[in-house]
Image 1 (tube, rainbow, N blue to C red):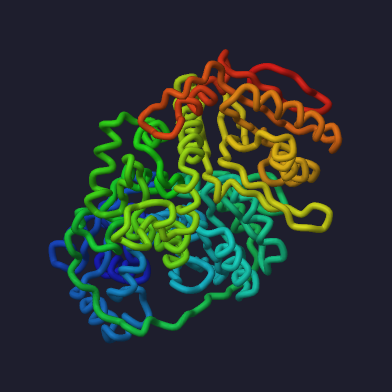
Image 2: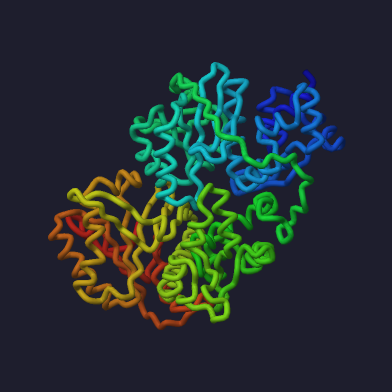
Length: 563
C-alpha cells in the first residue's frame, strides 16, 4: 500500500491530524509522510488549517477535501455517500471537530503516544456520547477517552460521567483533566465505574510519551505509564456507535482563517495561544481591569493590547464602562463548544449583553445572572482581582509561581457534615509553588463582616469543612484560609471572633487573617479601592513586612509571616 493511499484513509478516520501524528499513527517514516502530504496538498486532495494552543506547539492540521473524498471512495470501491455515513469527513463533522480543536489536539497526542506502546490503533470520535473518543487496541480492547474542559460546568460534567459509568464497558476509562483539584474530584465521581479508571493532567498528556508516568488510578497513588495502563486495562471491547448526522454534505473549501473574519467554528484554528489564554482568563474573571489582567498574565500593557486587539476585532471580548473586560456572547459560545458545554447555559449565567439595549449598562441591565451579581458588587470584585493580580506579580518577583488560580465558581467546595450537604464559597482558590512545595489557599476578601455575628457566620462553613477529611481529600493537604480585611480594626475584631469559634469547635484551622497598614484608598486604574487590595496582597509572600498574619488558630496559634 502506498503512503498516499494510507494517509487518505487515516485522515478519513482521524481528521485534523498533523504530520508528526500521522507518522506515529500510520507507521510510515517522516520523509514518506511529509512527501505524500505535500503531493496531496498540491493535488487539492487535502487542506490544512494552522493551530496552536498553550499545550501544543504551532503546527498545521490536515483534512480531506471533497476531491480527496472522491479519490478515497474510488480507491476503496465505495461511494462518497457511504464514506460520509461511516467516517467523520462531512462538512458538519469537520465543523464539530474544528470547534473542539484544542481538545482534538490533546486526544491525538494521546493516541500518538499510545501507538508507541500498541500498534496499530484505531480511533472513533463521538459528538453526543459521554466519551469524547474511543481508542481500539490491536487485540480488540477499547479505551474510552473523556476530557474535562477548563470551563465545563461541574453539574453537567458529573451527569456525563454518570452516563459513562452506566454505558458499555470498555477495557479502561482514560480521563483527562485540567488541574489536580478536579482530578481528585473526577476520580471520586468515577467510583463504581464498570471498568478501571485512569486520570491524568491535560498538560502532561499533551507533552509526554508512552513511558511517562503520569496516569493515576483511583485505587493507587503511584503514577503509571501508558504501557502500564495497558497492562492493567480489562478485556472490555465495547465500541459504541451513534446515529449519523442528518445532514451529510461533502466538505467545502475552507474560508479565510484570520480571526476578525473567520466564522465561529474556525476561531479555535485562528487564535494564537496568547489570545486563547486571555480569553480563558477573562472568562474566569469577568469585569477585570486590563492592569489586573496584565499582572495575571505576567505581561506588559503593550503586550496585553496586542493580544486583546484580535479578540476585540473578532467580537469575542468587549470593553464595558471603566474599560473593564468581559466576554461577549460569541466568546462564551466559542469556549462552551470547545469544552462540550451548553452554550445556552453559559449565556444564561455569564452573558454581559444588556437586557434592554436602549438603557445604559448597569447590574440591573445585564442578562447573565452571575455576571449581574459580580457587577452589582463591583468594588468587591475589583478588590479580589487586584489581590490575586498582585499576588501573581509578587510570586514572579520572588521566584515563586502561582500554578493555579480558580475564580469563585470553581473555588467552591461541597461536602457532607452530620448527614447534610454543605459548601464553602470563597472569593478565589489558588496554589502557590514556594520553592519545592505547593501551598494551596482559599481567599475571603471581607468588606461587610464587621459585626461579631456576621464574622462567625462567615467562619462557620470553614469550621464544618475542616472538621471533616475533605480538605485533604480535595487537595492532598489542608489549604490555608486567607481572610483579608481593608481595615486593621476589623481584622483585629475578626481574630477575636475566630479564636472563640475555633476553640468552641476544637479543631486546628489553618486560618490567616490579613490586613494592610496605612490604607489611604489611593487606587490604581482598576477602579473601586484596589490600592487597598494591593497592600493586603503585595506582602503576602515570604520576606514581606507590611502584613500581619495569624495562622493555625487552635493548638498551634502563632503570629508571623505566611509560609
